[in-house]
Length: 212
Image 1: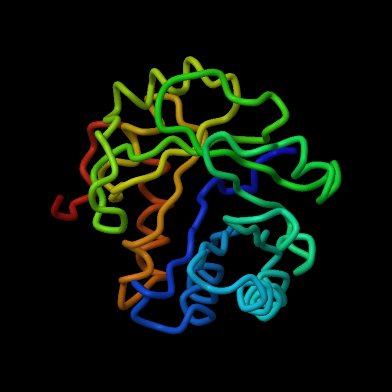
Image 2 (image 1 turned 180 degrees about the vertical axis):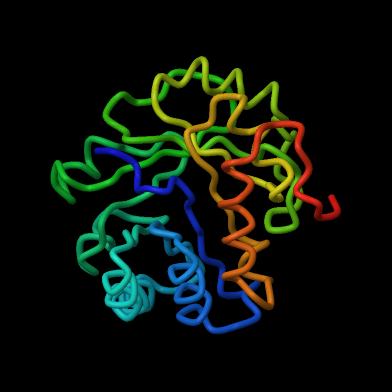
């Protein structure tokens, strides 16, 4: 399956969000985001599924995809577009549960060949991040390039990525960018998403004009 266009993935974290999740997603979708993934693993399974079902019509109204960081069975129960699995997750099982048309991704934290049945992999953390303190070491652009070279699948860069760092990630070979805390914590999520999109079109080494 092709990645959503544009290849910007917004991962949710309601604990960091300064606005209700539906408002954050609505602002991001209105700004052009077409891919979000629900990552609320602390919730019981039934509550995750209920939240996903509540947010799905919003995604559909913008023509956006909504996936789940979690169990494929929950994604199927909620009628979502796919699932993102942790490193070592069973992609074949997810395909069996969700069907061949689902978007299935996998996390990687070090260079290595990804399961060829995965549609994409997330490489993380590219930089140290407030969202997951203690995760690391950070890959940096060089480590991200090594991940891209080894994975054999499209690589989405995640972890502490501010707009000014996006061009370097794309130059390193990333197929797209994933963000979480920065947009969740933003008072104007739509403005943050628009700046990320602008950075995706900006050559490496050209400043966004925003402080680092």
